[in-house]
Structures are given as structure tokens and as C-alpha cells.
Image 1 (cartoon, rainbow, N blue to C red):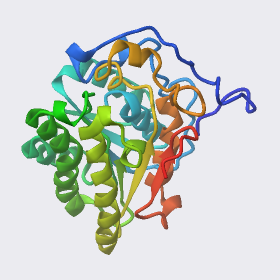
Image 2: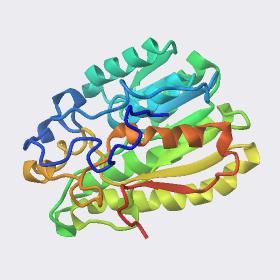
Image 3: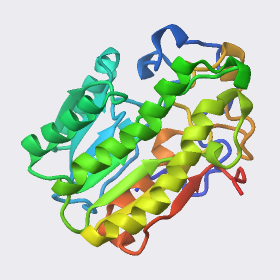
Length: 299
């Protein structure tokens, strides 16, 4: 698990507190981690594995940066080989994720492709099976997000892009993966606090996250017949490249201040939850949502 030399450190100030420098990567959506100020903490210096996923094989979509990179690192340090998917424009971040996974002594298979297209979802799973033999863990993390003025500002193009990336891809990936997942396998879908308390500025994104909750609750009841489980991790504000790539600079500078912690979460603060849900220790967790919001209510 993630360790800190001072076990009693105040969680409000454990990581950088806004205001951050105003910054934008909208022209380079969905953004690069290396261009962020401050760069997110994905656990490179602090995450210590304990063999909880030894011998397992995982697929992590959006595994190049942000939450996906933190999960890939944690899985590798817990003993799992990892396949990561990412967009072609994110290859620099993907290379860095591959480096840290391999540094942990595990395999990292990189598979570029836009998951808003079904053919790429199928190809990702086929590549994972070809390289690793089967899939024990499927993390559906990749997502599209863009701020809007309100419902009148939502184009059909944005709606299609957001729903196909965030919810269609989950259907496609799960359907392709199930035949290659042995009993004990785990599906982890990334939801959001936006599913429960949506913001008008994130309306398309919020709608897909609500759909993910319903999808996962139904999916959990279905896949248990195969010996599989499906659960949700629902983050609050987390400091990842999608933030400067989808929000105005002044919003980015104050991002996370709405949390009771007064700051956004860092990706490393979420990865232990994914490890729990991926591990055999969580064998009776099925159809559950674990909220990681710094205390921000979601009910």
C-alpha cells in the first residue's frame, strides 16, 4: 500500500493544495501528464507492493497517465503483468508507464487505439490474450470529458464522443473479455461523484457516469455466473491530465478546492482501492461502488 514516512501527516496538506498555475491543454486533449504543474503523484516514490496480485494479468484502459498510470504501477508492484490502452497522441505518457511497470519486473504491453470504436476495443482484448494468455482483471478507466456552458452547448458530436468512449466501450470491452476471464476475475469500472451530484458544466460526462453505475450494478448480477465480479471506483476531483485538457485555466487553478480536504486527490490515493477490488481479498464485493472523494458527499 502507499506509505508515508509520517503516518500522522494531515491529509489536507499531504499533497499540493490549489491555487495551481493557470494552465490549459485543451488544444492537446486529453492532455499529457508531463505538461502539468504540479505533476500528479502516481506513487512512484511511495507505493510498496506486497504480492497481492502475484501472477495475475490485467488490462487497464487509459493506462498511460493519471489514475490509469497509478493503477498500472500498483498492479505491477503487486505482481501483475499489465496491458495498457491509450490514444496515439498519448504515446509519450504510455512509454513512461511502460518503463515503470517493467522496472517493477513485470510485462507491459502497449496497445494504442481509440476505444470509441468497437473494432479497437476488440483488438485490445485480442492483443491482451495473445500476449498474456488470459485476463484476470479488466479496468475500464478511459474516459472523454469536456466542459460546456449547459445543455444548449452540447453538440451531437460531443455527445457521441462522450457516450461511445465512456459507456459504449465498457459494453464492448466486457463482452470481448468475458470469454477470456477465468473464475475469480474482476471487472472494475471507473465512475465518478458526478454520477450522483452532476454539474451542468459536465453534463455529457455526468450522464455517462450515471449510466456506468446502472450498468455495473446489473453487470455484477450477470457475470457472477462466470465466477467474475464487477465493481465501481467513483472518484471525486482528482489531479489528472483531463483537467487542464477540458477546463478553463482559471478553473484548473482552483481545481479541488470544493473538496472538504481543500485539494484534489492524487492518483496514488486511488490505486489501493483498485488493488483491493482486483484482489481475491474482495471476493464478496460485487456490484459495489467505492467513493474516493476526500469527504465530498455523493448521496
